[in-house]
Amino acid sequence: MKIAYLILAHQYPEQLLRLILSRNTENTSFFIHINQKTDQEIYNKFEKELNHLPNVHFIKRQVIYLFDFGHTQASLQGIKEVIESKVDFDWLILSTGQDYSIKSNHYIKNFFRENEGKIFLDYMDNLVVTDRGWINRGADNINYWHVRLGKLRFVFPGTLNLNSHNRYCNSPKLWYQMLSFLWDRVVPLFPTKRKFPEGFTPFRGSAYWCFPRDCVEYIYDFIQRDRGFVNYFKYVDGPDEMFFQTLLLTSPLKDRVVNDNLFFIDWENPNPSFPRVFEKCDFERLVNSPKLFARKFDATRDSEILDLLDQKVLQEAK
Image: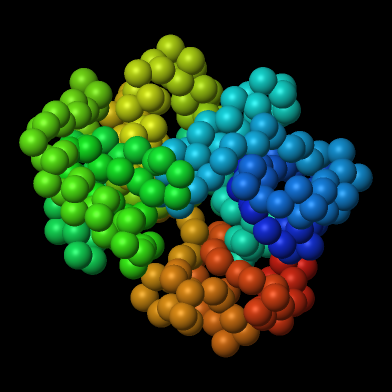
């Protein structure tokens, strides 16, 4: 059983090295994407920490902003480079540099061997999705154009604040208030809405997944021949939570999709990070979870939880 990990990271080189070493076996490979926004000095530390490992590959860097297409673009670039690298793999796991395994490598490999052919992807109907202060998020997300200019995202033909990014970083400055006032009154006069890709049904879910090789090859082939589908998601709010769900659940592979991405992510108990950053007190919950992986962790806040996982979980038979 050969597993490839596609890891998106932007900080904490030492923690990423620890993650890779904890998963490193003779049948494991790693494809690392470092956010292009990451400071060059930190990027150099990533390379210094990892360049001695022959099964670690750095992929072409993309700029990733929260809720923008960069995350999806990095994932697709990773898929492209995994396939074209000719590295042998049976499964590809998409995760981040602040994830950690909560089952041993031996357990993980046996799990995937026993679930051959299944596609592990969290999903839900996009139209039932709501958000705090944004009741029609599911529909507005795909009907409007979401475009970034500098640090702001604009929604056409919606109001300036009708997307996740701007609702969390509204500026109190006078120029922003004036821009918002004008935008909200002028843009709705041009009601040009988007047309969703024909033949597809919108779905939404977690950005992280576990795909068998033939599923990865299907995605690779699809994105080569249907750039229109890919380009559509460049102007969606939070496309990383829609792209793979929409593609696979309207594909010939749909009956193989299991509604579970195998990641333990706690959105219910922020501390105050959202989602929760796991700490030592979460150890029992983590090890008793049926999931294989968890996010997220921050060794600068609590490294003891990683020590416990190393000592009591990950050291099981390799």
